[in-house]
Length: 328
Ligand code: AHG
Ligand code: MN
Ligand code: MN
Image (cartoon, rainbow, N blue to C red; front, side):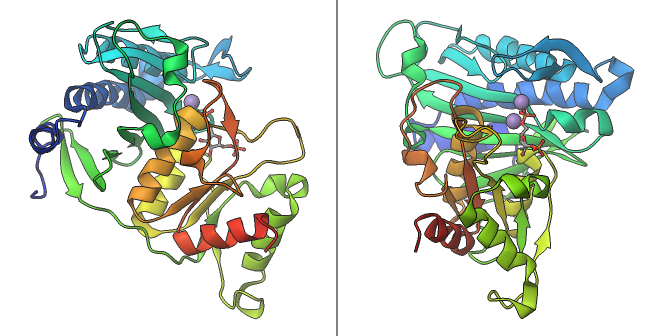
């Protein structure tokens, strides 16, 4: 489709050739994100900067914008008759919408919360599953593997507000046009280069890492004189949405690995709200996504708020890191 096509038209056309596309729900999510973008842009003028003084189910301090974004998504998507229920990083239990709805929506309403107060890119991540039966949805209905996702995406609130999504037919990118209030198509069928010279990891955790991660990063840092025979660059935005967006635009590898600080915790990021949707996008763009040893989208989903270790991005790099984890 041509550049500048609106997201609504793009999705509606896709749904004509593929009735499995959750068109109305995707449009509801996009509309909610436009409202979040408005709040983000206003910042201190709207009184949305700072902590809300509460904690979420994962024991993390909630920012005002975490709660505002969550409420906007609940309100805007709750009206969608195709939606049965929602689950969010910020809510302990699921939120029912319409019992007759056939879809389930999961989201990280505001990703990269530590960036809000300093005016650095943040985002919203979403994942859509199909309810497998008639009638009201329960928490158990959400426990499907990443393979079962019918759509996933994110909106990055950065210098531009950009929506990126997949329904399993490639990855498409749209930027919000403030003149018309529409997301307009900027790139279709995005592909990530298999090789890269750029990695993203929180280096301050280096002393806690496991051996395979240390080995990989050490080899990158050794540069042209080392075994990799090339110089690497490093980026860390502290917002997975912004880091994944960069990788979709110009390649790279992103890691939030398991570390020794809390050995019982499989990782920092959440499988259902962060890792699965991002893995779906990355794989659709020709990249790879693993927890170290295994493909993330094949992992069984046991709990709504389950955590996971994440290595994703350019295929050849992810394959190499996986090889190190498998002891090869
Ligand atoms: P959230 O703001 O939804 O809690 O997610 C933050 C996540 C992720 O977006 C980012 O990559 C990572 O946490 C940042 O972690 P550090 O604070 O260790 O840099
Ligand atoms: Mn997040
Ligand atoms: Mn969040």
